[in-house]
Length: 100
Ligand SMILES: [Zn+2]
Image 1 (cartoon, rainbow, N blue to C red):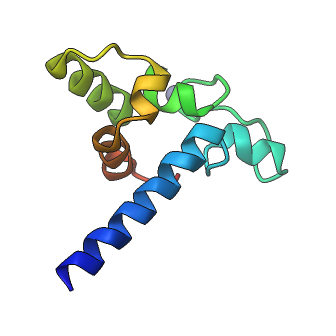
Image 2 (cartoon, rainbow, N blue to C red):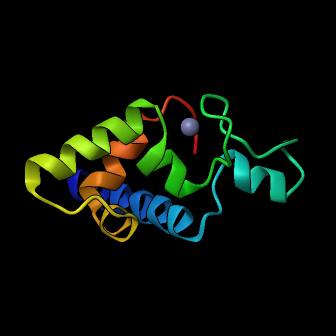
């Protein structure tokens, strides 16, 4: 059972990583492209809410946590590093207060 759980967790995590890498997630910039959001802007910052904005630039807990994670481990805080790191993807999903 334990192994099944871990295999599944990895599949979900990979899916999250792929969606974030391709920008096809539930963030406002993509929702606007599919006519599910009027402006595509971040509710906090008033700029397009892209994946990069949400995990790199936003005044939200996700950006703060990702920055802190990179700083502590001496990773450069850039989008390629963030989206290729399974630990960071898990952190993003955990810290996000809404489905992304
Ligand atoms: Zn923002």
